[in-house]
Image (cartoon, rainbow, N blue to C red; front, side):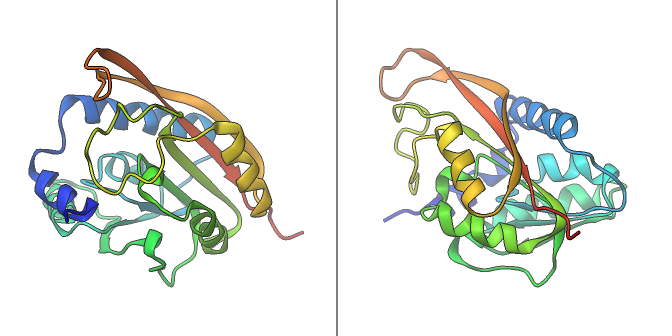
Length: 213
């Protein structure tokens, strides 16, 4: 049985298509608008893929740990780093969704289109809270609730998008404050369920871990 890891390893060399580049740009811009970025911040992107967002945000951060479960995605990212002037992005083979966590702590944790591949979102959000320094941010982009038309037969899709309010409530239960969600992008593609052109909104939810007083 094929897994998401198989799919992403196979897709890595052709991943940076215009539809995904446009998504990454708009998610990146929305993170910038909703999080106070600074060169003092250490960050982690989980499910970084080929690093479209990590590479874009790196000049505005101290360091980015870019983690993914796909060796081939990280290999593409490593080539990007080698061919650029970016020296503060570190790729690492790691899957926080399976409970593999880094030893480092972060001021910002971000992701795009990774959350729906996480079976136990409740546990992941708890882990992300614990990985943050006091005052740190999460910025998580994913699909609004949809009917399955976005992914079709891609394996290991555990959630057909998310209800923004419900996700915000889960974040609140984990200790996050200042929770806010906004539309970051609208993807247009043929629906796998209807065969017709469809729009799939992508939201960004941001939240903070309170600073110690």
